[in-house]
Amino acid sequence: MRFSFYPLLLLLILFSCKRETLSLIPPDIEIGTRNGMEIKTIENVLISVPQIPETLSLDINNDGEDDISYSIRWHGSAGTGFASKHTLSLLNDKVSFLGIAYDDTTYLHYDTIIYTPGGGKVEIKQFKKYIFSKINSSDSFVSINHYPFKIKAMDSHDILRHPANFGKNETVLYEDNPDQLISSWVSNDTTYDNYINSIIHSNPYPIKKEIYFGFKFNGEGQSKLGWLKFMIFDNVTARIIETAIQKN
Image (cartoon, rainbow, N blue to C red; front, top):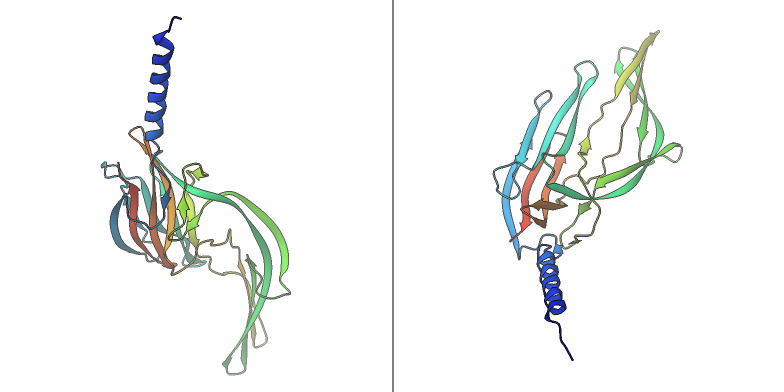
């Protein structure tokens, strides 16, 4: 019986290539667990004031190129009121964040506040607000808005896996929407002010709580997992705590 060495050699080559390819995909990670992770402590507090934006750019893998940025920016005017917006942006194609699809249900809420400043005068302020969870049972349904992607907020000890829904979308983390005065009139001793608050979307991330965003980093022929850890204090303040990425 003749034995051919070449098929066996071909199988060994294919198996070797397969092992090399698999070795380029590190294992899943447990969020917050430091074993096998390169941790970069940031501990930077961003504090912004109206019309003065604050931005922090981060180099995740220490290659000299910034990969993501956290910014607090402002829109509006002195007349209509200033509003802040916390945004997470991607600065290149190497990073993508774990995300999910979600729906926001919009309701319409009316409110009235009556002031009596004295001298027989009365001020009546009427508010029309679009909200994303009912305040009163009388709040009426407006619409359901579908968003195909938002970054998923993770907790310590959650598992981040490679085959997951990673996306490269810029994400609004928090947005402040002031009430806007749309009409005002006086009748006898009573002043009527009508306000509207047109919230664009809900703020899907908790306030004053540590949040992890899981990400995938593609570079140097290798895919690595990691996280960004931060906290939103309020509309003008955020704390960027740390980044982590799998070691080689």
